[in-house]
Structure formats: structure tokens, C-alpha cells
Length: 266
Image (cartoon, rainbow, N blue to C red):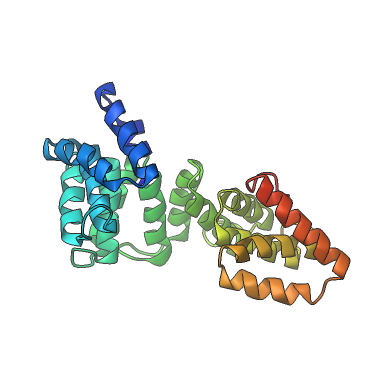
């Protein structure tokens, strides 16, 4: 929701709505969904696309209102037909998942593409997913990489992870472990556990980085603390290969990384 509101603010052409968006965002952060709804519902009813998109989000999550996928779709569609990029992305998502509508990958691609053309990172990333999975379009890894890269360049963590994965596995690009590590790191610094786990695997195998059990354990540990089951398994495997001194160093590095809010954890 915060991303939704901030994106709406960036796309807004009239400064008149800056205050309501800021107020709604602040209320959402406080968890005051009733206040969010008091701000956005009347604006949505008046036809403000950013408010319609965010009202749809509230219905899709059941925040401040009873969860209602059909009502979410209604508001997403109203926003999307006004060329609101976030509304288009969200409408694509409900079609992809079959939430409140019959699942329709081609329709999802249609709306993702419209959002992506406006530079919306969520739309770009999700369009990349459709190309990678061959859903609603012919599978095309190179096209997936193109859209992941555009979203990743905007700091979208999931896109950074998926771009790293493509380099890791040589899908749509020449396999390049160092480039994979680069993108995994960016996603990991935003707290994405699966990216942290994959960096641990790269250190464990010495792919794109020197083989280093201590740093592998550190990254597995960070991901495991977020509940990543694969990281828990790999952390326990690599721990059996380490000395007590190495274990102590890995745990120290993990604590220091957390204290730095995951920044600079090389």
C-alpha cells in the first residue's frame, strides 16, 4: 500500500492532491485503515484514479473493509481505464491470479503491458514474469530479462532477484555469476530473504565470488531468520563443515549486517 501511494504521488500531475496522498500514506503506516478510507473513498467516488486504485487495494487485502475481490476489481478497473499505471498493474494481477475475475493470462498481459509502457515497475516486473513463464505470451527469456532489467533499475527488489536468477542460470542472457551476485545483493539489501539465501549459495559454491563458508553461513543465517526454509537447511549443512571460530565469525558478521540495516554486507 505504501508503494501504491508513493507511486501515485510520483505520477500525479496536479499538486492539489499531494496533501491527501501524504495524509493517507501516513494513516496507513499507523495502521489506521479507517482514516485511510475516510480520505480516499470520497475522492475515488469523484473519479480520482489514484484513490480508486488504492481503494481497490484495501478491498483486495480486507484492510478497513471486508475483503471483497469483486469490489477490488471494480475500483482497479475504474483507475486503469483512466490510464492510472498502478491501477493497470493491479488489474493485471487480479486477472493473472483469478481474483474476482476468471483467470485470464492474456488479459493480465494486456494490463501489465499498458502499465509497463508508462514506466511502472510493478507492471514491468510482472510482464517479465509472464514472458519467463510463457503465460499469456510465448515464453521468451530475453524479453523477460528486458522487463526485469527495467524494473530492477527502479529498485524493485523482486525484479532485481529475478534478473539475478536469469544471470545465474543463463536464461535470456549469457550466464554470468558475478552479475547474478550483483543483482542478488541489491535485492538482499532490501531484505528479500530468497536473494540472501542465493548469495549464501554463491559463496558456498564459489560462483561469482570466492568460496567462503563464513560468508555463506552469514547470508544463510540472515535469510533463515526471515523464515526461508531453504536457507535454514543450507545453513545447517554448511555449519557442519565449519570450525567453532568460523561459526563465531559468521554469527558476528550477521549481527553487524543487521545493525547496518543490511547495507554493505560484503
